[in-house]
Length: 338
Image (tube, rainbow, N blue to C red; front, side, top):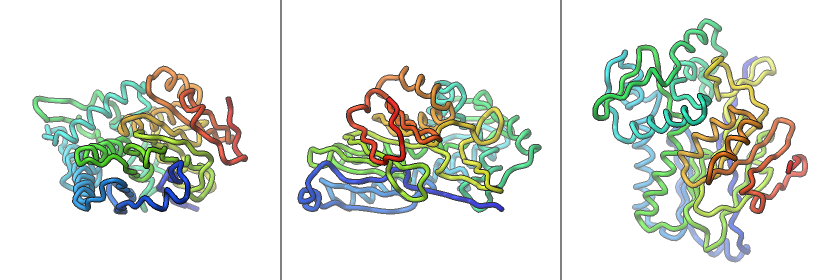
């Protein structure tokens, strides 16, 4: 029996660290829409100009139209269907593609934007989701490798025939950063940006932290296992519960191993990355989840201004040093490991 599960809203917003009276007295302008393959939710607190919100939503759809894997006419679609011919990309797309290549190098390969053929073959998150044949997987593996991406003069890029790019693991991070940029340009100093679980908070809420709930990856609903307070930071979570295909009781999630072509085997149920730029958090969350707990911890500890919350499959929660005074475990079925 096949079952497809798609969960959005990786993080659950709770409130700011304020009294109920303070929370109720602060109005906001909110917009909920669908873009970049997910539900997006924007809240503007101190500057509630509808024109700013319109600019934000237009920018999100603009990014989607350039970086979508499936939308005919997008930069990525044209690049993937160019049969080895050069394609001129918009500077936005070129920037994100280069960032994706950088994350591939930093992660030792666990982040790979050239998995497009295999991601499409599995199609997890769509109504086409299935387990590909071994022949399909073997063929897909031959198309992987950032050495098959060639940057030419100007904004031109050429892929070796058969290779396909998918920027789904990083485009939302770029988009969240762009929304934050628009907020700053228009004097918005307090906002929540939630792009299907890629969360970025602009400033604070009347001088207090925004309190963000880290989702329980084992719960079927948006139930938090703990909370942390943040200002002017982003939190992005990757895990095996976000999108998966279940066949005969076995779960196949959407994060693929570039070496096997199958979903990554990890001792982690989820990992949440906390940092300043959402594109960084997006890239690192996928990479670190694929690394597993020990290698992922070592990786995080080697980086500056990068924090993480690891949730293992045996319900242990491990946090990086910079979160020890701001993370609070609220679900007693989990164990916080020092």
